[in-house]
Image (cartoon, rainbow, N blue to C red):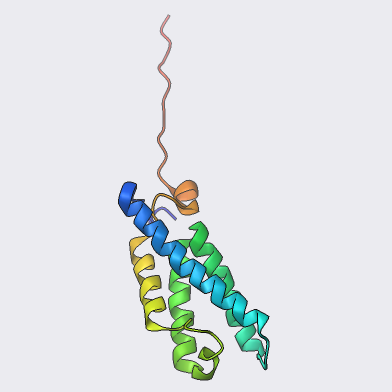
Length: 134
């Protein structure tokens, strides 16, 4: 996993990535939950995509497996937009180009220092205790 995550920006760049992840994650969670609460003629495929969007949104907000779910989000958004444009009407703007663009930017930039990825997969500082000499 360390090869996926070269750096975890701290400071203002890390906060910027947190804001970017939170914005796209909240949008996906809100739109997926609104789609689930209004089940007028929803097909199984739309339910699957709504659950997928809900999971991806939660993962974005927490910053867990960020680059993997960002790539999955780009692929799912493009598939819905190109393959089933009728399903896109159930979501307010889920497969829109700005959502796909932001997910692609997150996939390329990484999660940032304020994420579960940084906690689990970040670099560790190894402290070697001094050797006691007698």
